[in-house]
Image (cartoon, rainbow, N blue to C red):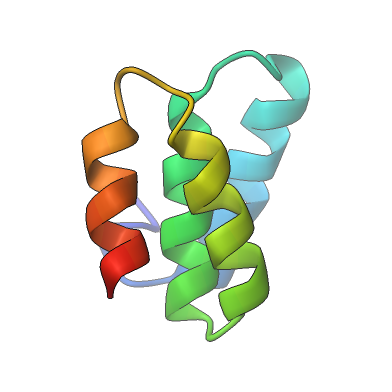
Length: 68
């Protein structure tokens, strides 16, 4: 919901909570990177995009985001 409205800081709260509940759920890393990118926190964005490269479900998306 927050993600669709561009409320990146609010969306991050929920993605972080989800990551704490299940740290192995790798798809969240791409979402975290996306929101950090839109909040101009490029260091964290790159960190999570790189982590999402390890995830079979998000590796393509992560490569695209890292090229930006």
